Image (cartoon, rainbow, N blue to C red; front, side):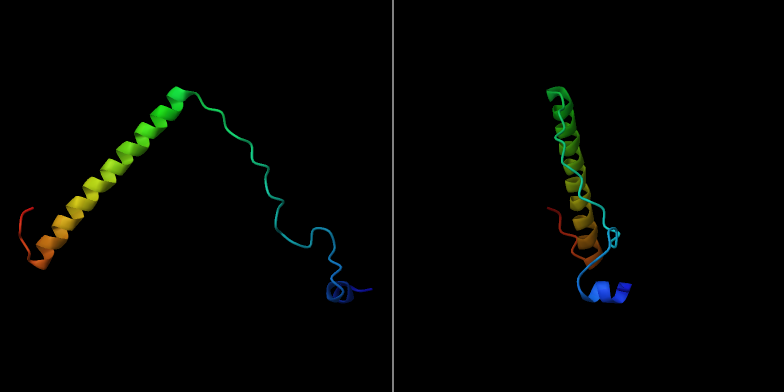
Length: 70
């Protein structure tokens, strides 16, 4: 059989796909202090994003000509 016949008969050769086998999940174990530090970093990042969002909203209001202060 040639490759076309094998393909038509759903007989795929090993490695015909470039997809790799899924990796096995290995749970990570972290110290509580590390997790708390990561959580604090995430909270700070969220606060920075909120501040930037507030600033952009004020700039957009200014740009639209609505100079009302909140």
